[in-house]
Length: 204
Image 1: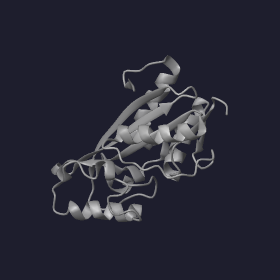
Image 2: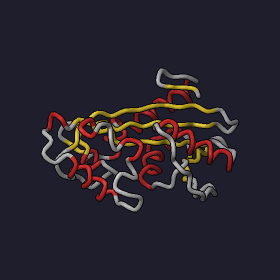
Image 3: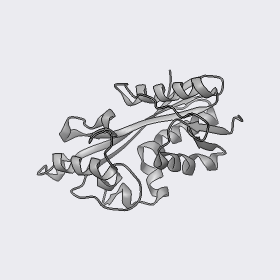
């Protein structure tokens, strides 16, 4: 497998699309783990986003022995004491839909005033080179939780996460990538690929 091919340790179609949108112009061909031949489910039992990202990347790397990129990300809501956090995907149950998760958040924040609906998306990326070197990058995006879903784009909690007057789901792909937690973490990753280091780069 060539260095220009990067395996994303995920089968999430939304994540894959975002990664391809951001990294393809950089000369990287991004494949899902299924496309690369990895079909197992990785148990995400870390207590932080970075721990989960490392766990996913290392598991896929051990199976495929090629360059791997994994991200773990989620929504942190101040009024919910940081929930859903690392449990963002499982917040409403294992088989819940994105709509289910958004509705549960809105229910828990019912009656909470706008000033107290502050939240942020956090993203940790783990990159393992074809030679097995491991590097981590972080990204954050500040915003607040709206009172109803808006927008048709994006995925996950995007329809209820507002930045200014727009939800992430109302943004174009390019607009979202310019400000999102994943976009910022990937920008740090790109800077590392270009320069060998970056202020947001954390070796592990």
